[in-house]
Image (cartoon, rainbow, N blue to C red; front, side, top):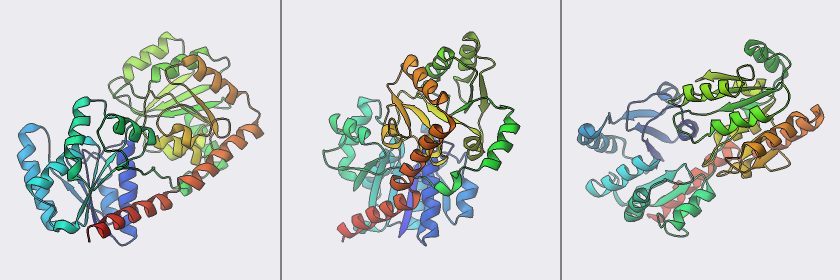
Length: 373
């Protein structure tokens, strides 16, 4: 198949990482794969090309460049001649749907358009309406979150039964626990023998709700340390909050990191305090690394972390409950904590193995193409 992906921008987000991994995997399976970033690439372009994936940018930088982006997109369609166009996130989906009217996908009635959401909700009635008005222009709509599907259906954004659940996947071989690596990374991070919590995610919005996480740590007894990786506009505000809570010696902000696999090796447990999520890739990574997890009950979190088996699931925006769950993990003996981590890794291996997820995408594409005749 000739598969062309389009996304708003290729940066460090979870949706972008999944797209990168899937595009590379499909190229290894001898499909012709291309990735369009509507805005200039920030990340992954070199590694996509190294994997045999063609990359394109539409050069979108605002309304003044929209006409140029439209022309660039139609040129890519004409040259690439896709069987499947697959858009990710709201703006790229609207772009691809509307331009399907202006200029049908080049290979005509045989080609299909798949649109994917990566969040629980689009957070806007206008966006729900836009989805509803353009649904007939897409052949399939998918979401990584079953909760997200229910929200979109309830809002009338997609017809009941039209949406498909397609989970994220994880390559377990990249996150296998390694005792030697663990000791080396812990030495680099200078955490000593302290219990180490890890959290990763953007500070660009308050979605990750680091304020709740910091308040939970402040309520915990003991001397555990929390390492947070990520950057964004709210970072300095959260640093100030940590200082005001007396957490200068217990919380460290790592900034943006490119070695997250190594950070998972060093950690004793993982914590997520998000207010909303689709399907958190970080939980798949943490589980694959054999870490017990404490997470809020958002999106597919409870499907990844089975409460009481691979970790604990608590309600969002509740620092008291989050602190209690974190303390339970810290107070486990080594054997029990290892059993929780092993259960988490086994579960994601059975249900979210990356190769099986790619199989599902291939099957969907073939199904839609077959339906086109």
